[in-house]
Length: 156
Image 1: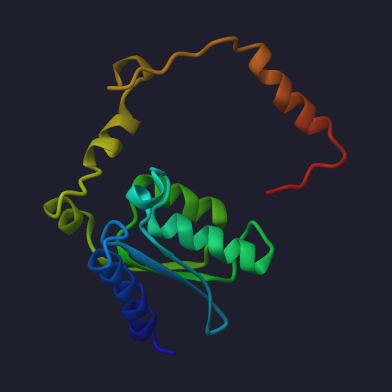
Image 2: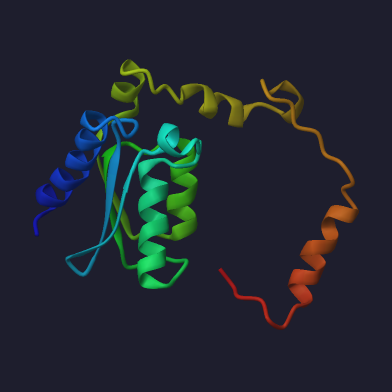
């Protein structure tokens, strides 16, 4: 299939999601070797799950279907430019390439403005709108020490 056809599928998922009252106007498709290996649609309000964005749902689906936690040989087609959370998931999944249609500015005009998150990331912990405070820094190092000495760890 051609790039436009994969993007059409992602956009169709987004449109169907809205028309069927399942969630927000976002859809995503993951492709490997010319085949769909994962799909996702925004199900934040449907599942009461703020992490159920289309891209995250597609990554979860593809990883289940391929029995892996890395998608290095896959491409993501998404109906809109990914938000900061989805960007993190994309990089953790190590997708090969991302194609998007709508922009974050267009999403903001429709009521999905994530600009404040980018601003918060830049702020020191104590200046964020949701305060962050470090607690038990020495004890918090114990899991990392156990990880680095573990013979059974799986690198990622």
